[in-house]
Image 1 (spheres, helix red, strand yellow):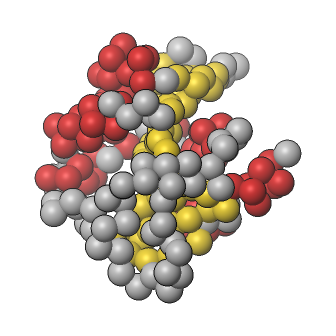
Image 2 (cartoon, one colour):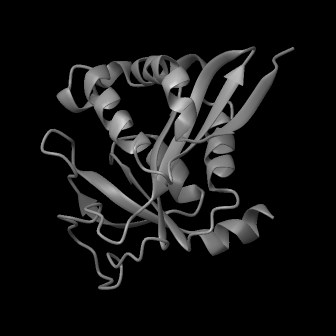
Length: 185
């Protein structure tokens, strides 16, 4: 019998989990590690920067006491650069941030051997459950199979953005958290 647990963590837990989080990244993104943006080192740099945000929230999943997946993010500040360079957006209010309006869903990864079992959906919903923001945003590669899952889960494509010089161009997506709450209550 498989035993799995999902747990919430704040930024203070990351130092103890850091190596395991990087291991999951390396496993889940093994086919992309030849691209600078996806190397373990670049991921670790981004993780270290995200953890400095006091709104950082992490959800982990363990199966038989092994970390197999996680999701994390944080609330966008009023002065965020998240929307810098956004293309193809049609709503002029989209990029307005207040410091409490939008939760940035930064990562959702599950080890390859544990994919297609509903774990990503459980992590997704657990991270977003109870969020006080009015909406969430994430970035996803157009060729990522998870993109279709996000669309089924209620996310909407609002434009395209390349957040780092070495990153791919991502679809920028938004999810109305009011609708999410009604769906999951």
